[in-house]
Every structure is written in structure tokens, then in C-alpha cells.
Length: 539
Image (spheres, rainbow, N blue to C red):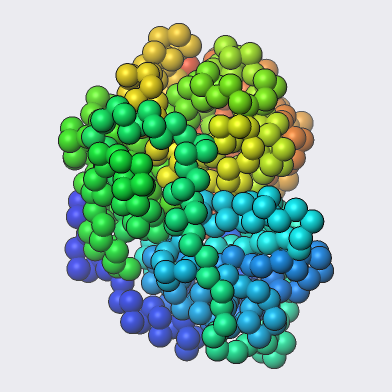
């Protein structure tokens, strides 16, 4: 943790936006450098033009590859395109629209040239395909690196189900895009975009909120609410939500600045719009006492941060547990067998809440894409990640979004406060009285590329240990119990604790997630033993 964490950004911390955009158009990627090739992680291709990793060459090639992929899959309906407030997003959208138009794809952009949050685009795809049964299906492109620093750009494909593309799709698109770049982008078709159709993403999304939340309860409560978009794509949405539903809601900071000069620095002195980070949210948390509920979103509004006057910034795991407890007690329109979806590195408090509700727990690997099938058919009522990303079904049990929705989860906190009369922080304290008070943390451990590759392929059988911090090991997992998909690492559990280890996709480290219901000291012992267990398996 840097000594500057949580302090206001200084001029020396800010990017030069002109330099960033110039590099986007002028720099040509060096394909012999793996860091400059197209690589789709769990949330699309990300990188900076300053590093030669996110340039016009990349975006033109990726878009051309998406055109070919959707044609191969028989997707011939409109393609919704939206972008967030990062400096590279607008140039990338211009490039993408030019490639789409030249290829005869019916692209749809925002009617008011507004920023488009990820959940708004996901909702648009779902609504279009629901409202046009039997017609050619729609899909979409979201241009965002999410909460990443201002120097980064991001580009993500959402197929007709509305959520993140699976690894088969992203692998195909990335491989094809790299082939196109290696061929000098000669296969790219491009024309200046001119005939793009439009759609009111914001109006449609805001009008629809009454179908997924009890907006009347929020309005009649008279609660004073605050929402900080953190300079992101939700900035125009919050004002319209307040107006449309008559809420006493203040947009705390409506500024949009591609340098994010108003942010406080994250733990490592980077400007990062992470609403779950106490350092990045320091200026927001300072105003906790001014509102019954105060919330934050990242740049594309797929993540949420919940601030209460009695608890400050909530740990994402704590809020997910409260949200699940509330929703499954206040959504009679959901299927009685609708499961609770969680990633395997989320808190075991969720397991205990699920058991108390008599609901099936559906535990999947890291990545929101795993929740998509269940949200689509209603067999999963809620899907959430420990990194403050979640979504859930509409009041009648149909799909809302199949991508993370930070606006939705922020408004849910207001509904919870309005209906129960208690803040989410109060409700979490009640859960700890019932189930125990777990200590949870994530740390990084050094690992070279070869070690990371081995970790990603480890089997539970490779773990020889029989105890974890004094307790017998009850499970050694390399595949998620919910859907049998590979974890890309391992998870080891005991009666009172667990740890999971996964390689980082961008750094020479592996991540150790750990939790103990025996307190912080036992958690520290679990973390130390986790490193020994994993290092032994990798030796």
C-alpha cells in the first residue's frame, strides 16, 4: 500500500490525452511482442496505445474478425455499439463503426451520442431479441477497459445472449484478428461511418428499471441518496433516474474528464476507477454521513460500491451476501428452484446464506460469463463476483442483464434500506451474528511464466497436504462444483476456511484468495500455508 493511496491525484499523475490518442492512430503494433498482440481476457482485449497494445490497427482487425465470426455463427441482426468515457473509447468506436459499415453490418449507436454503460448495452440486446422473436438476432460491442487506469482502452464482444462472449468465441476472434494484423490489415474493410442508426440506450434502460426493482418503495421512502459515477458512463443515467422516479438523489460528481484528475489514488498510486477500493473511493466515503445510501460505479458501470453512514464502504462480499438474503426473500416472481450463483473466490458467507434459504448454490469459476445460461433461462436468480460485479432477474423472473450491472446493485441498496428500514451494513452485521464473522483477503505471490502455466493446469490430486492451518482438508478442487468447468488453478477447503490460487493474466504473480471463519490470525495462517502448499505443488 503506497503512502499516497487515497490522496488526490496530482498533475504528475495525469495522462496526456493528446499523446494517448495520437499513439492510437500513429503506432503500429510489433507482433513479435506478445504484449502487443490481441489477447482476450475475461473482459475483452485491453491495453494502452502508449504500449502499442491498443491501436487503430488492433481495433480495425478485431472488428473485422467479429464481423466474420458473427457471420459464421449466423448472427445477422443489428449490432449495438457503446463506449465509456476513457480517452481511447471514442476513437475506437469511430474505427469500429467504419469497419462495420463497410462490411454491411447494421450498427446501432446511441441516439444522443451519449456514453453507454455495459449493462445498458446488455439490456438493449436482450430486449431486442425478446421483442423480435424469429427475427435475425442482435449482438453488441462494448468499448471499455472497465475500472482500468485512464491510459487504457478495452474492446469486448457480447453475442446474442447479451453477456460476455465465451472463450471459444474470444479465442476465435483473437486468433483471426492477429492473422489480419500480421497480413498488414489488408483484409479489413473500412469506410468513414455515415449511416449509423441510433437507439436511446439511456431512456430505454431507465424506463425498464421499474420491472426489476421496487422503484415505488425507494421513491416513497424519501431517502436522501447519492450516486458518484466516478467520471464514468453512468453520469447521465443517474440524473434521469432521479427525475423519472421522483427520487431525492444527488449526482455527487457529474464531471467527465478523461484524465480523471478528480480521483484519489488507488493502493498502488494509480488512478483506477474501482468503486470497491477504499483508496479509490476515499473522497466518496468522506461524504458517507450526508446520505442514507451513497454509491459509486466504475467507468462502464458494471461494478458497484456501496457506502453507508454506519459502515462506510462495504466489502463487496458482504454486500453480495446481504443482497442475496434480501432478494430471495422479496422476489416471489422468481422460480422456487432458482439457484444462487457465486464465483468460487467469493465469500463462504454466501454458502451459509444459501443453505439458510434452502436454495441451491451454483459455484462457478471466475468470470461473469459462467452465469449467463442460468440468468437467461431463470434457473439462476442472482449471479455475483467478489470483485463487486453482479446482476439478477427481473421481478417476473426473466433475464435483466447477462452482464454485470453496477447501477442495478447500487439502486438495490436503496430498495433494501427503504423496505427493511435497515442499511445493508446493519443487515450484514445480523448475518455475522447468525453465521459467524469471516475474515477475507487476497494477496499476490511471485511466479514466473512457467510456474503460472503449471498452476493453471494443476489438479486437486497434485495437492499432497492433508491439513489447512490446523484443520483437515475437506476438498481439493481444480474444477468448479457448479458447472464442472476448469478453475484455472486450485481451491482447497476445510470446515472453517478455504483458499484459492490462480495465475495472474497480466503480471508474474499468482493470486491467493483466502477466508477464515476463525478470525484474522487464522486467515494469516491460511494464507501462509496456501503459499507453501501451492509452491510445493509447483516445485
